[in-house]
Image 1 (cartoon, rainbow, N blue to C red):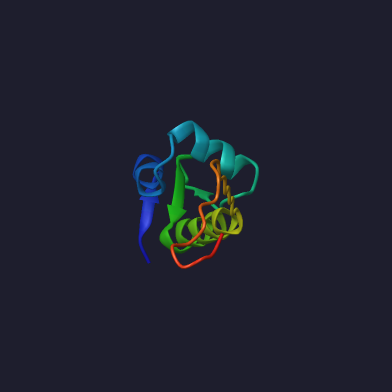
Image 2: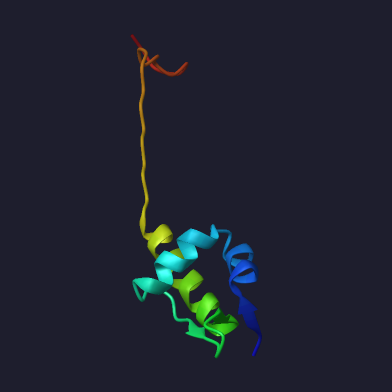
Length: 79
């Protein structure tokens, strides 16, 4: 299991360091601190977070269908 420093983890997730700190502070993503009080992130926890975020994004479906103009009769229709 790979352990990431905060800069590596933020790059892995594609978020800023400040966003990652906020996510960790709000218990949205698991982290731990070293004896020197540096944050570290396990790859499993990062992958779990991405899976949760991906699920939320997949649930959002927006469909817009618009039509403007008159309907033309088909060529075989009688008038």
